[in-house]
Image (cartoon, rainbow, N blue to C red):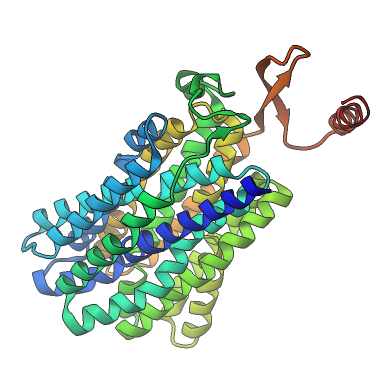
Length: 440
């Protein structure tokens, strides 16, 4: 009971970090694009480069972060990441050209990558086993809640004091709130899967080379790449699109913030459904709902449908926008085991990051070529549907179990099992539980 309470306290601490750092950075990058475009007379593609470099850098550091998490203390990695984020935002606030601004945002993106999504997801996965879907939902969903709360604040700061002062405020906020949290609270569990975390080579699971030869691993990677392009192609362009359609800047920002509210609720719902019905089935439905939500966004440009379409977009797209990032780690853990999970998840995140950086630039380029965002959003929705194909190829997962001998020694085996419960597997589980109960 004490260990369970400690696990959920850790989940709470990770959620606070996600709320503060992701909520004030990646959730607000989109509203900096318009003031940057006006001040420097950039086009949509140029301003999108700032967002793209931030996201690309965030993902490029993932393999290194995953490798470090398998070898040194997590709170050290996350503290360094927070300091890099602060440094990047302070540098960006004094930039006067595209190259300097993009470089500064790349530095802050690397810091965000080292302090939030990957380490937070890894730690939540390690600390919680029985309700893993809900734990990841709370941690990752906190970033959406942070965006909903902090985005209007940042929008007000930009309107009142300018984008430079706003970036300085974000840097100060992150430094004051997160560095003590990382240094005093965040820790890795002392044991994983019943074994000491230090005994990394003794943990069940695949080595990196074995996992990279797995069809399931690459199916998950391709699916994450497709969904990443589709998601990021929409995410940073919501406010500019709505402003193009006649919405005020404040009104567009409120709609953008509303998607963060619905996404937080969606994270919790998706996590609970995943724990009950399996991550694969839940992700399948989520991708279809997300694609439908994207198709609703262009309809907001029609005066007769604007409010209804905007509400539909907020509910459908917002509730499912984080499903891939939330559920793919669960599927990956089930596929490769905990031994090299951090490293493999880092590689997976890097591949998705390369795709994430393509999304905003591609949308900006299509908008410049067609003078409209509609065709770009249609492409993004189509990618969500296409992502169902590699997902359907993931037909099974590996269950990694400890087998205890009479002499007390452990051996580790990996057995492959279909997700669908058969009569034989149910009967086998019943026999195992019966023997444990009556024969110790």
